Length: 441
Image (tube, rainbow, N blue to C red; front, side, top):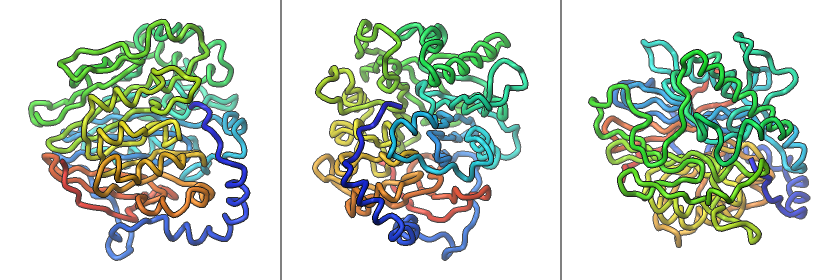
């Protein structure tokens, strides 16, 4: 969660002057141009059944969380964030989104509540895998003085630690297990890095508890195919998850070979940015493919080293996909031309929680036909009114929805897929828009 560059003061003065006047218009436009579900009557999302792949991008207004139900019912959560209020204060006048569906509970509680609602029926609710892309609080959760203790007494509850107490996690996967020494001693850094460090230290307390009780905690291994795998892999031989990158090591595209892209001596102390070290994966199901890259950047500024551009070498081995989630929430240091040229996504999901997301340059790049031809549909889990005002009409050319849970529903075999937008303002989470079907590549 690095500090984004702030839009100009002129744009913010304009936003302040026009936000109230356009609020009603934005609310009406938020549903995009998709097909109304049953003539505007809200209905439930079709339940998961055998053979379908569901990818739920959960809207909490506070960070990233994606819940995946694979074709055989194997489940995985990617991140469980809850943004740090102190960080938000430090980047004022940028604004965080309001908590969703409301602030009566933490994001960890609401993520677990969401999982319970959409978990495969007829089996115990659990997560076969929880994948943490990196150790920023909008991906793991923020510990506050009021955060309650786990029933175990070993750690406090926020983000992924709270989800894990409410929904059993069978295997926890992150970027640094088992030793937590890459790029430096992460445990030592956690003790010296203030609020962020306390949240990371709390996560490591959960890791230690799990290890002490024989519960698996493993590091993502770049280049590996199906380290994260189906329970019934033989039933769906065309479903795979390829590990693309982790902690600055990137798959070469050949077998399981990797390259050390970030030089091993490039980071020498605790003052480093987690984002380039994020876990990156590619999910494939028949013709369908999906990319998730955590917060990897792709647009370093002039004072930064070459390896701050992780997107370009990652893009070279990922190749075309049908759908992707934007790196780094769509902040302006992400989504460079190389990744758009290589991935050519038909559907783009933006998991965002701050008014700086997306950067205007990112929107321009996504909309450009120069990087790749053809239509593209962008779906955001939220959007600040002032952001839409500042960036302007170009957003409406590519964005189809500006708020709600974004669910990809891939048909058995992976030849077609749909996008559903669910109401994020209450616990019913009914469908408010449907898009597709799209043909997979």
